Length: 336
Image (cartoon, rainbow, N blue to C red; front, top):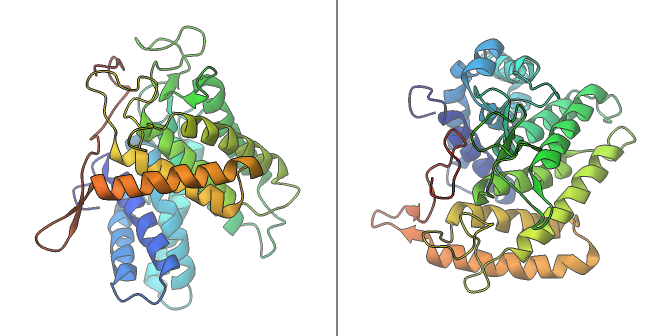
């Protein structure tokens, strides 16, 4: 983390770590110091994320986005670096314990942050892949000793978000829900917020495909795999349907395309591109849908790289067109 441990910093660090990890996996022989950057980022979060009680009370579920890189580096440090092994293990275990300590609503859904009973799509991106990887990495060499309670709980968290946030007419999920139905924006029946925010939906779709890649095929995971694949296919079809036919990107507020002040937003568009291409590559889409997904995603890739990637004069890259934040700690109206 680059600041003083502010509430948004864990996600910034965790997302950066995942990007570096993907770069290293794709280009293991690169000479751009990606591994050094990854380790520096992980080292920067350890002091902030090793106290389970403080983590659960002070940071959103976003904190868990750091867990996957921590687990990977912990495996590499064991036997070669006792000090790092100890600090990485403390952070990994602290993050895992913080899930148990995280406040929940009456249904058992995890609060996203300090707002009572509010759950966001955003939190699924950090929660479910880490919850899965931690469980798998502690399951024995052949994956037969999976913690079934953990597998069931992560599936349950996805199901709860889906039940409350799905807009049946569009097939898309709104940003989040208030289980108490007391927020000014909460639907009185479902507790759902009113609009589909592109980036929050992108977090959710990426979480599904990343988690599917990690889950071992076993009797203990079959229900979870079926659930996640069904949701990934359903949501992917709706996202493809929502693409802007002119640009090939996706709107900031997906349920109000073309409305004044709405715009094609770069981060959500990149997330949908990633999820669709990965789902196509790994075979998670139905046979009759995978070709369409690939065409849509490749067109979107060309659009976001042409329209939003900026080559700076100092040789670095910038990325334009990204919304700063959209929080439900507001009226959650379109204007907001």
